[in-house]
Image (cartoon, rainbow, N blue to C red; front, side):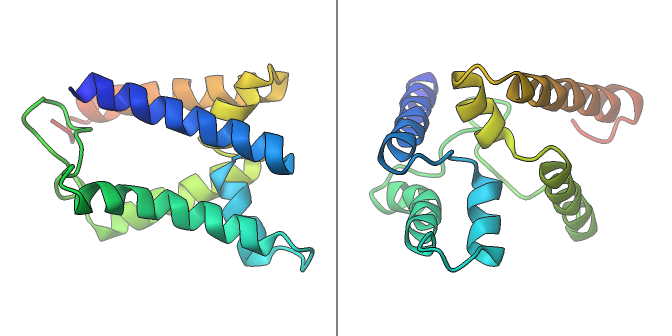
Length: 150
């Protein structure tokens, strides 16, 4: 069942990216959408940005409301999302680093990984490869060298 949920979620993410590109000519990059909403120009982009972000956060809430639970992105089929592994300080530093990375990389995983890769953008290919390699190195270091995560 979990793999079917992942497949459905992936199709819906791709569909939303295509619909946004087809209807407004915009890339569904979450960091760009949020930064445009927070620091954007008054050029009429506020409504679609706010709608997109509200849909992004209300979707999981609606699934939980109709009895779908939290989903399963944990290590085992029986586990669900629990408390963060790190403390508040770790979470704040991680969030700041992600924000810095999206600024330096001119986008995030949704903009580069979903939309840019679909458009065969060389810059997005380089950014996505960087995301994946750094994520793999981080998991290896934290699980095998530092031993901080199970």
